Length: 281
Image (spheres, rainbow, N blue to C red):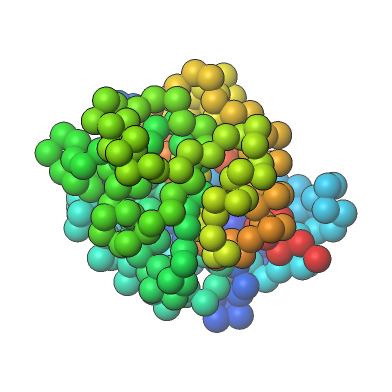
């Protein structure tokens, strides 16, 4: 197969209007508070995706034969900070909310803008939020649009009433008090039935790769030991896409490490598997 540069999986270019699934690169790096590099994430992930084997041995077919996958141009954020980027990201995704858009970050502060547009289409929208952190701070380091506030902005600014977390193992006292007071849902990997029962019919998946144990994925700005592993993530993907209507997703916080391309590949394969599960026949 001839590889098409800049396209997810290296597959032939397809008009966005004809695609069923769209990849949207969002190279935002504005509020990362420890390790840097998320701006380089989308390019590295798309490059790595071109090494993913198109045949999915679990599903038994080449995924691109079952779903038309297109790649949109990377969002041009210029020198915008996280707050200024919200409108740009929202306007970019707005024409495509009738399709499954998988946005590739970039830091986690891209999520509120994306969720906000899908909430306009799906009033019952819930979020399945994979993360080591709750991201429920009211503000962090002088801004309400920090990656540490992403879930809170989805709730407060876009009216998301139902967020189900998976993988949480680090939270501030203020976040914990807010969560306890407001009876926020926590998902437990080992209770898939509970996760499914807490989600609404229409689901947005937000996947911060620091949800993985740091031994699996160190290429991220705020790693935490003790996270989930690859097969646990796949088990949840399989169950949620089977039981719910997953309308869109994002994969965020990959900060490539020069010379260690395997972590970029892992993130690319994660996106590939989610699309495969979503559109399985």
